[in-house]
Length: 347
Image (cartoon, rainbow, N blue to C red; front, side, top):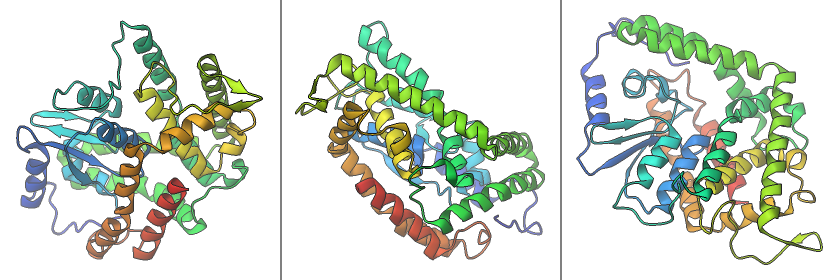
């Protein structure tokens, strides 16, 4: 984990920390800043939404590989939210991915589809209900659960073994590091301890094979309902999907429901869970929906953003050669991770 030089750190906000915090909170009135990590599940939902709305924003990568989400300046910006993403727009700071999408969907200076139809309409109610169901799926627990219990993946996790090993090791180290930070930065003590407690509870979950297996089965039930929803709207020709040029879960245009489903399936593909949870023979329409969404310009923009990640992480590894060298995966390992993630998404 990152090493903190206690002789140089007193727990007070340093000039560098102040500069980062002020930069994070103060952009220009019209400038939208997004702190994110391209391979993060929540970040991908937000990024696709931004691209669909043709929103101009300032991207700021917070490297989860290098523990930047645990740095004091970021904790001050995002004391209670998930790791990423965080949106800053003037005085607005939003750390919930669904609320970020909701906020952006209401901005006048955007184009694209209405991602969140009014909840007073039938489509709006359907989208809201779907979002509630999707939110109940512990994607992070399932993801790390596969890393800790690879036997639960029928076709095997697509990440290289070296990366999986590093993820297991770094998760355990994170608990100790958060506690250390709580003593180094007294003003952030409660935040760090709360995050440490959350991480400890999650560690208990992901190391319990039976509980992880239960969440995977819950996921299968969710996808069965998705296929049923699509069959109510689209027909099958001799068991195969028709030649539809577009397919949406609800309504006649793209919504956050479609985006959320796409990102979920992408993650399952990476974890090697698709053959078990969503075999094409039983889920032809869900597969067709995924294929059609993959062709959208917003997905191509996401892949382009991810293609830059390997260079960004390499630069961070060079920076990490000082204080944060212990947490860094190493230049070769990080670049390899980015490469495999991009490759799997493109395929």
